[in-house]
Length: 397
Image (cartoon, rainbow, N blue to C red; front, side, top):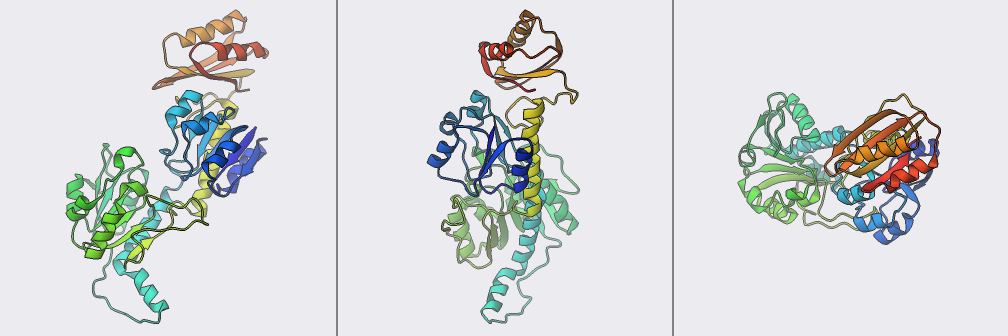
């Protein structure tokens, strides 16, 4: 089976698939959609990062596709409902680059409070401007974390260890770590010396920070966005920076980003003093990418080898016993009454004794793993696929 890995996914992922007997093709960037559509005809596993959108029309061009690996944290660029309808399992790496993003955020806060980037630029131009006026330590500052998930909560711990007072806001109920204090968005904007955004990519977060929110912040606030480009109105941020309302900013994500390193980049934030712009590198460390490559590849290979879906973002979660029976069948179907009875009736009709069976549901999907001790009969696999309301059925081993 063929694996197509786009966007310069870490070589460890390709090596893991190759060692398992897959044919691996690697592309170091996100191709145009027409090109991707032409490549998908015989692909069983598609690996992407954040720039490639997986939509229903692309999935229509991939009849052999069994799994999508999102070698990143978010999966909002993958149409999960379309994947469900076609029986395509989706896996991601929700934790592997957390530390890398947190370290970048911490470093940028310090650099912005000290004006280090502009002072470095001055020295490169031969200008010596040593002064302490207007520059501060991070200790004792109030940090407002907008989004208290994996990244926000880990940042909270490190910031507090650096002597900061942490406030956070999240729409979900999250346990506060250390002395961090949950507050409303309005309070967070009002009290924070530094505001950093770490929300997820759900559509409801589009335009979360704009003109009104910047106006509600402290004068001279430091602002960071290392989450999603569409969360912040960059034109409003640029105006706030030029007016001095926002004293400095670090932005790693943008509403429009080049598809590859060969394409040009433009932003209204360019050329503004005390602004750090980075090309979506929050999780781009060798350690993070190696971890992501190994983690996602291992989860997909586990799915092929055992039927396990423990970390799938769209399938019902099943982690089967590691002890193999003679054969195992996987059956994904619509979550309606009577499906398990139909599956069992089929095996009984063939005189096959079921030695182990598990079923889990998730939303509109049901997922069953059936272990048998009988010799393999290809008719069973074909008949499983013909059961009404079946989405995908396969022989696992």
